[in-house]
Length: 132
Picture (tube, rainbow, N blue to C red):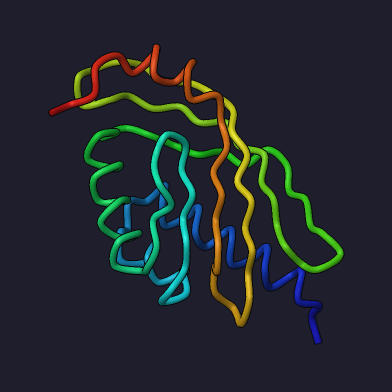
């Protein structure tokens, strides 16, 4: 039998594949029904539907984007962290490139909590004005 850490990394890989392939429903399906997404500059987003709606808007804002995981980390408790290199282009044509970290708390085969961390001030400078 594979250890829980193996399954948790596999779930995080499923999440990133869905994000990179822009499969909104599959992204949402990796989260628990009452899962929480913490994203820089926003209040925590709670619930699978709200998380789905967030990603629908985020991927519309970034019509071109790719998260490349460069390293994986697993805690003794089985939680997973990913070191990420992001490259994208906004709907207004601005290039956005930065490194980030994602912290996954996983239970019962679903993401209970995902905390995305990056230098939001630098990213906001690259993005420029957010769409209205």
